[in-house]
Length: 293
Image 1 (spheres, helix red, strand yellow):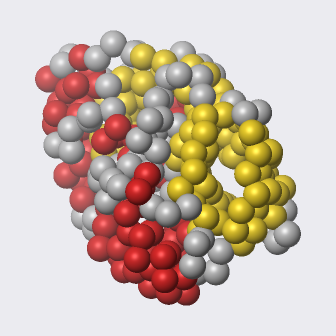
Image 2 (tube, helix red, strand yellow):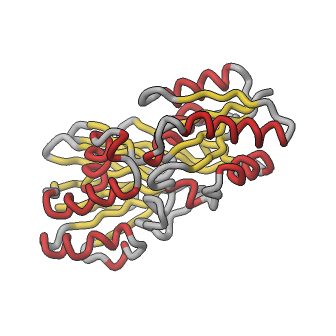
């Protein structure tokens, strides 16, 4: 049975010239392990999901997602609730799930490690009807994700993300949220509402330090705006590993929750922006994904 390799050619700000090099590396490592490589390159948003579904239909024994968090999300969504495992070759701006799982940033090592690993099952989350593997959220991170997505290939990469985040600290206007969870309720004017399966956005920016990928729970994180000065001064801590020290930071573990707002909400799933209504439902799907790491 083949090993499907799905490559996002522009992840992490790479140029399309990287396609041939990424494909060459994948084929070389797989052949060295006695595997047949079935290589595909994404051409548009949503294409990785289509390619992963097609790979399952061709009896692929595993699917390698070579890209960032968005590529991983698409492939994982196609493999969810099935037995075919996902392997990850991280090349995005954040690489949140890959970092959480300790996956090497070196493509040769990441592919080899996936081939030699025993599959493990981890949870998936769902927000607004969209599955996520690592993090979903509403608020400033979703706003940044939407701005980042509009930037196109020229604005990709960690530096592009950092520039947008810096501007958002001064321009983003928080909304008022009413959150009813199975373990409590929160009513707040919040800068950020995160639903975390993993601990971090990526690059070790830990928003939910206690989150665990396979505990059958999600971590709800709410950061209330105390004042705009506090937001400007303290929100950077959400991205440098000191989230729990931010004034207005609250967290609880949940199995499901309903989030309401007076206005339609922009949200993100693993960094991919989505448009929702005034009410969003979140829930966990325990053990829904097979991962090689």
